[in-house]
Image 1: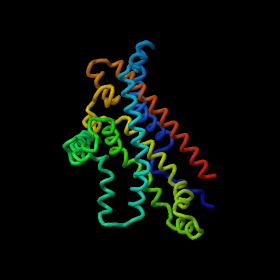
Image 2 (image 1 turned 180 degrees about the vertical axis):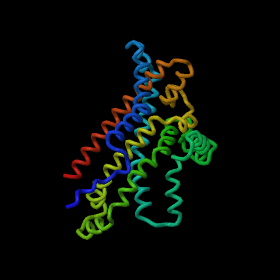
Image 3 (image 1 turned 30 degrees about the vertical axis):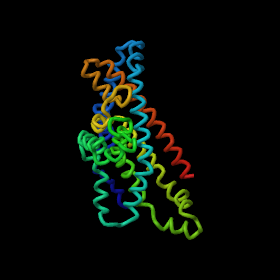
Image 4 (image 1 turned 90 degrees about the horizontal axis):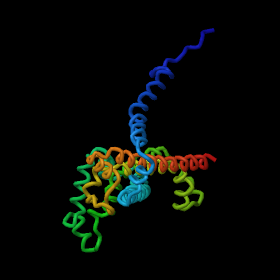
Length: 277
């Protein structure tokens, strides 16, 4: 009887792979984050609290987290519809539309900000028609939301699209043959299958929007207490050599983003557990 033949993995052993992964994670992610906490630790609690709770800073939190959340929330239905069209329908220019979805990934954020500002300014292509209606986009919180929606949409599309491609149309046909309406088919058959991908896409879009800088600074106008985002405020403090104040804001942004992503992760696990049950 021949002894069993051991299979050789293309990748190195578990110990070496784990060591490389932990070293990479530590150098690229954990070390910079630890440096921010260490720098902030040199502040007294009163100085830290004053730095992160001033009226200007609180206003930047509201516009940053609020606009990011609303942009990611809007991108969920828009991204699902776009992914559905790209997967389920064949039409002229489909490949072009599919390629354009990735444009925010490839386009420099500063270029995107300049383009959006030119389009939505009061004399821009869209702005000249919106201005008489009393809708002002550029240099308002609405402009910040538009920019964050633009850069976040691909995350939802690209997370939902592969799941829809694996979802067999026969399941929808079977539901229809059993008398289910389109709304019931979507709610009972399609939505449970794509819900984890939707939550993941929302989390990615939100995380991307919270840290966005280039596409926002042009269209927002950077008006303190109105359209100034927290990343810009951090940069402003760095230019003023207020390194501790900048790291204090960075720590608050980090903790806020981590808490939001942790909450989304818990919701996703709960949703996956219910779908399996």
